[in-house]
Image (cartoon, rainbow, N blue to C red):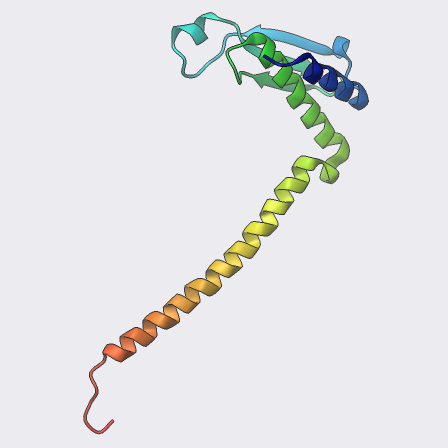
Length: 134
């Protein structure tokens, strides 16, 4: 269950982004994926359509319809925030940070790989038979 405090924060965030409840079109559809009969019988998947932006969200994180309504609204806020803020959004910044870390990591991996090759070459040189006169 989602606490009332979390719902309150979500509605404040929606208000801050200019997302109004009357602008949302909400449908409950049957879920898909694993889960057997239960998932095929209940309409716990939430589909939200934000009319002004045309953004569509489908959420089926949990088996609870109420929880999925919360998660769908939260995802909608994230998407609209990303559109509004562009590169400044938290999601974009996080992705860029990971990209930089991977770039650094691959550089280090390349250096490590070249060191290993050098060591291996030195080992092979030690195994060579010494010719008389060398």
